[in-house]
Picture 1 (tube, helix red, strand yellow):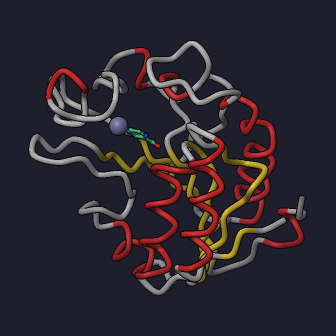
Picture 2: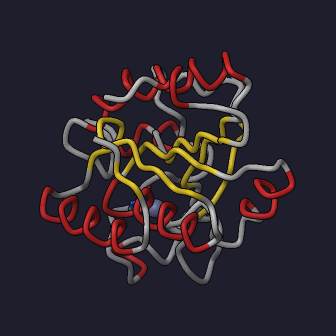
Length: 188
Ligand code: VGL
Ligand code: ZN
């Protein structure tokens, strides 16, 4: 793992994607061993805080009856319903002072990417951000979509492999290939 303290610098932002109870073991849409990304992610968060690098934490924040839910025509079991315990950030992820990016609130479509109609690209540009470092859940869904959008928006985009896990292993391998094709760097 690369050392966040020797890596992060001015012009960087850390994006912590959807580290919510429903995506961790025991949750409604659990990612196998999802909670295991938390210790490495917390190292990045601590380093970012120390170095004054802004930290953004996205959350999936669905209304009840969201169109991404199986009973309402979508592919997923109901998850991350607004103001439920499942939608809360995992207790162990250290995002207390992060800037929260809320997505998945639309009634008409899903928003996998933290850049999808949230204004995040404008916010980062306004702050002079050039590079983004991304971890969180799930590697093959919201991390992938966020990383690809970040690269498209012109940010130098890095995904932290030890700080992300996929819904399925096949999905994870495919996501890495797709992200690389989009110009995203996957650190090793
Ligand atoms: C996600 C599936 C459905 C994610 C969100 O955060 O990766 N996955 N909604
Ligand atoms: Zn969702």
